Length: 157
Ligand code: SME
Image (cartoon, rainbow, N blue to C red; front, side, top):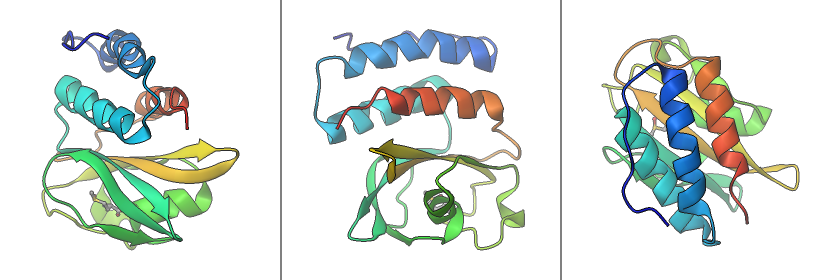
């Protein structure tokens, strides 16, 4: 397993294309979910330097904070609440260009301006979400959606 990431400059597409095989390498041969989620956060944070990158996992009917990189965050989110709870309820990726315009957005930090939340699936059920926050407006698009969804498909449970 490679323990150092090669960080590249370039377009978003180029950055993901360089990062994805490295994330695959990090996950290969490791079956522990928490270890893998932790390394995904570390790799994404290191390449993109987003404000906050982290996971929430479904536990007893709520989303509970799991591995993340960035400032401390709210620990529990109910289904349908905020961007994370909405992504869980709708079982789809949500891209929010301006969090202030998302009804019910949960502001863990006032510095967060835009957000993407990608659900993790296991046997057709949402088992958690990946949440990425930026301190800039309109940071995320369908390129992020495509590659972040691909990264989550590498996970085994
Ligand atoms: N903003 C999220 C809550 C999680 S934090 O941003 C880390 C939401 O509305 O679901």
